[in-house]
Structures are given as structure tokens and as C-alpha cells.
Length: 155
Image 1 (cartoon, rainbow, N blue to C red):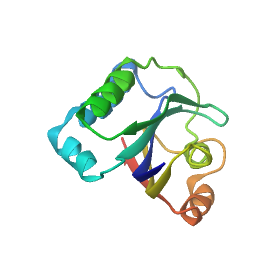
Image 2: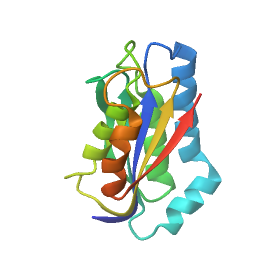
Image 3: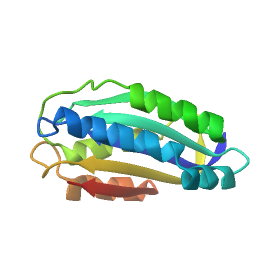
Image 4: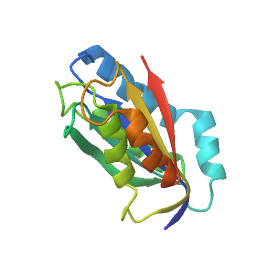
């Protein structure tokens, strides 16, 4: 299905992320889907809206897709996604910070997801410097070559 945007929300769950920080990340993402401005932007992405998935990540080999790809096209579907995100338990509670590995994992999620986005974006939150796995400067070129934009929110 054609959509305006395919969006991977990649949430840091490494050992440096305290439980309240994890909750803040997930609540913030859920609240964004409930925000009027975001709702208007999604509605403007008519007729099919956007596709979104959520990933938790930590060290090398420690990434999990916790919310499968969902189409968001109106207030009801945005509210559903917000509720799913907010209710998602933390599945990774320890590990190093492998930002490059998280980027590679997220990039692969665009393949065969059932959506064809005009834009592809990875929003990646991070709570520290990459200290394991392939480092971001080595992972980034393949992501960019795949036509994916990377947005990073570092703490």
C-alpha cells in the first residue's frame, strides 16, 4: 500500500536507560500520536496516511520490533497506535549501546513490510555513546543509500 511515510521509532532500552526514562520515551511517542498537530499532518497524508512501527534496542543483536507495522490515517487509527505504544512493556532491560546496529536493524524493517512510502524515516532515541557493534559512521552510509532519513534524539 502506498503511504506518505514509513516511520521506524527506535527506542533505546540499554542499561543506562532508567525505568522512568523508558516510560517517558514511550509516553512521549504515544502523546505525539494524540496531538492535534500530528493528527492534522497525518490527515494531510491522505488518502492512505503513514505506516509506523516501534523497535526497542540496546546492544549488538539486541533489537526487537515491539509494535508491528500499522497504518495510521485518521484520529481513530492514531489513538489505537498511541494506546499500543503506551501499553508496550520494556522487553530489553540491559545491554550496551549499539547505535549502528540499531540503525541496521531498523533499515531492514522497511523491506517487505507491505507499505511503499514516499519517504522512509528512522527516529532513533539514544542515551549514550555507541560502545558496541558497528559504529554509526560505518552503518549510516547503507541507510542513506537505501533512501532512509535518520533522525536522532540523544540524551
